[in-house]
Length: 404
DNA sequence: AGGTATTCACATGAAACTATTCTCTGAGTTAGG
DNA sequence: TAACTCAGAGAATAGTTTCATGTGAATACCTGT
Image (tube, rainbow, N blue to C red; front, side):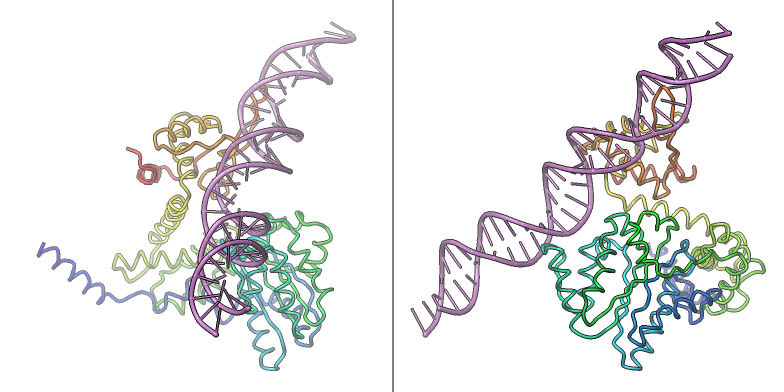
């Protein structure tokens, strides 16, 4: 005991003595807003031009921004918005910019919540439930029309909202302009899904995308630039071995140019190196970081799933141990048995089918709909969990579900 | 042999149901004047 | 009579169930040579 305590104390002492490889870790975190945004000059310019009329109290065109994850859409939108707001405040112009992420659960992922959130932004107290949506609309409407002002509404991940609840909200919002006497609203929609516009009603589509902005993926060189710039701020000099940044960039470029991922990779690699008491990062750290990120992603998404989902995953896991091609029915049979053991009320196959589809979305499994001709049509399910992780996940799930 | 038509075993859609959380409304109750 | 309490009606939402319809290609079934 004494010895252990001694050991711990000295560990902590060493920890403090150990010089960190970072000068400022926050620079590499995804919510950090850099002072200068690289390789997006064109988009920044365009967006600024589109929104600028608001400074003269002319209604800016609605804009539709799309590009894959990690291409800087949100960053650019927020940057332009905050600059615009600064100028407007300086010139005493009534301009409000509201940024809402439609994907955040319990925030703006339904029509009611979106409007409620907007109304709250303008100082109304709106309860989370109980009121008819219509009332909230009215309340919001009255509130913004009480004075002459321009409102720019930035809706991030708008595709999630529309997929879930339809395009009625956007329609109402765009139409609102013709009823407002004093105020005016413009919408900036941001979407990851390039095909998103196809789901929209043509009328909504044309009004939402009066202007369109496309964010192409970064290429490897551009990611390198971004990484280098941040690395200078985030790390102490000479921490990075030659080639680390370019390898990092190469990884990310392969993953459709996701800069966020490249930054995360770099950060995690550095943390690992630091923990090993090294004063430089090398390729091994990078590889380990890659693996760690993947592992945590999977483990985390599994642990946070509801019981029914976990049970389904467990059933898939076990079914996959046996034979090669695994179908929905196989999983369902095993799922029912597992439910019997855990005392969980089994859901219908219909529902399990949906759950399997959702797990596919999450990237925990891989499914493909195949036709077995005369013998029907079903999903072929594959686990996309690396083999060395499966045992661990199985144990975790057994614990979560209370299985012996 | 070559060409349709069937058929299977689910997928996929739509609507309706259940349960929970929370508001609003109005009837009934209470306390003070 | 004003203030308060409390039950009931009604909304929003998430997670399901029920019922209905869709679907790709391996087979079964023809057809005419």
